[in-house]
Length: 139
Image (cartoon, rainbow, N blue to C red):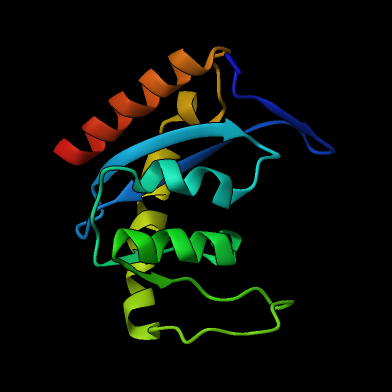
């Protein structure tokens, strides 16, 4: 949608999906409505990249996404949800590096205009997100 705004019991929301490199620098940012699933945006985050591993939280756990990650030639490092019947092996040492994306999100939350979503149109919000990401990257 042109607004990338989702409705839920908590109100209006937007999810920011981010791919960062091994240093925590943002390489791709995608907006989706707040009620959209995490793994729905994951193929678009991976498009054009050839990573050795893809790290994600439990929200990205799905068999289909794991297959897409393996097709790209990467190892999925995603902990299983608690309701998963077959729990795949996880490289927990590698998973510790997921904090890089969490730190990126903590940095962008320092920009109030971005954190409170003042822009109505997704295009404007995405532009501001890209600008803030560049400022963080240059800092």
